[in-house]
Image (cartoon, rainbow, N blue to C red):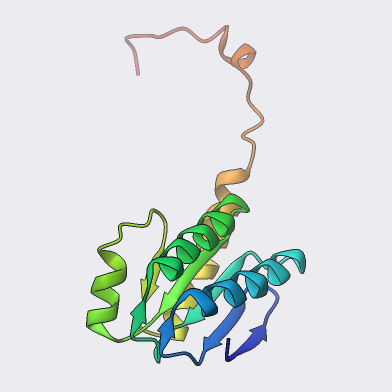
Length: 140
């Protein structure tokens, strides 16, 4: 797989240089993604601007890496401006997969996702026992 990787604290940016995301590329992509996961990077932004087609193995790999990212509270974002490619990927209905037209929007999506995880993961410090003495009242 011909690609470049840019590692940041919150994400890894993978610049794919392949016209087709086929079986050969999919295997290399999985190895690259797993290496990034081991490094603690669970948000992956993949620039697929050059990529024009995806075969069954590529689709399966996108689904798998998307699931692995989500399983670790991360996000997989595909970046492309190609409307036909975008429509093809969106037609797959992969839950939680994000497709955006620019790298900047993808980075913003990663940061927003991280913020949502931080706010959603907090404990409100209340237990059911805290509400035992609360009675409903007709008065405001």
